[in-house]
Amino acid sequence: MIIVMKAEVTEEQIQHVVNTIHNAGLKENVSRGEERTIIGAIGDERVLDASSIEAMSGVEKVMAILAPYKLASRELQPENTIIKINGSNVKVGGNQIIIMAGPCAVENEEQIIQIAQGVKAAGADILRGGAFKPRTGPYNFNGLELEGLKMLAQAHEATGLPVITEVLSPDDVGLVAEYADILQIGARNMQNFALLKAVGQQKKPVMLKRGMASTIEEFLLAAEHILSHGNHNVILCERGIRTFETYTRNTVDINAVPALKDLTHLPVIVDPSHGTGMRKLVSRVAMGAIAAGADGVMLEVHTDPEKSWVDGAQTLSIQEFAKLMPNLQRVAEAVGRSVNNKSPEVFDILNYTLNNKSSYFNG
Ligand code: PEP
Ligand code: MN
Image (cartoon, rainbow, N blue to C red):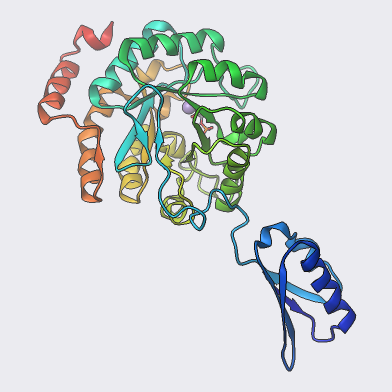
């Protein structure tokens, strides 16, 4: 940390800053220039509170050198974190792009199993589906809760796909962790510190979604909360932020993808479904995310998006998802990555089946 003192600083004020640095267990380097005195705090400056030093008399400006998050930073760990998902071959953060797909909400057993089978056939790695739904209005469908978790477990049984689902409250973390392979923290809860602590104190991987009005630094500090409680298996998800633009539901911050990859070793996923809110944009933004360096995408997919109970307008049909997969594969290859390998014949069979509305996907 670099502390620039005011031009008219007194010796006593300099000494006060030096004592504060010492008391924090750091060393100081005092450079007395012709016009200004500059004090360097040497050591891990994160033990110092920059704003209280800035408030000390005689201090003009404080400049931090290290990022305020530590465990999440690339400075601490230069190599990528690769998260192995329990009981499967899925690794998030490795060379392979990870595709998470499924409905916004679990609606019934038949719905979630059919969607799971469909997305698996098209090459998805992980099944998504909300059982506890955060809804803006209190009268909207807010999920099947425990029944929904059980249906996700059945879909897992039927397909072998690992499951990601949201947890809304610290009290439910234990329960959701019994059923989920990855716990999702939604955008609205990115700074729910009690919830971050609860998921940080258990072992299942966590996917943290970026708050819709959060900076990249706040996002990484939220991840740091989880890491600091002992759980190092954290995946970040850019899901769009609020901007002045109203054409789309949110604005996918594509900048955040390479920025996060530079700043942190944690895997980065993009959610173009919530990021755009518009089905017709989802596939192209998903390709953009992979091109920008994302480690995967999360997509809302439904056998009948128009009948989807939640977020139908941004949900892909199984057919649209199946068509997107080879394109994601091509983009992944262009940036030196791969996706779950499906041969072209598998896509042909799948497209044929879908185009002919086989009973396989339609009950
Ligand atoms: C979701 O993924 O189901 C969800 C509610 O997304 P977000 O938290 O990003 O709004
Ligand atoms: Mn949704």
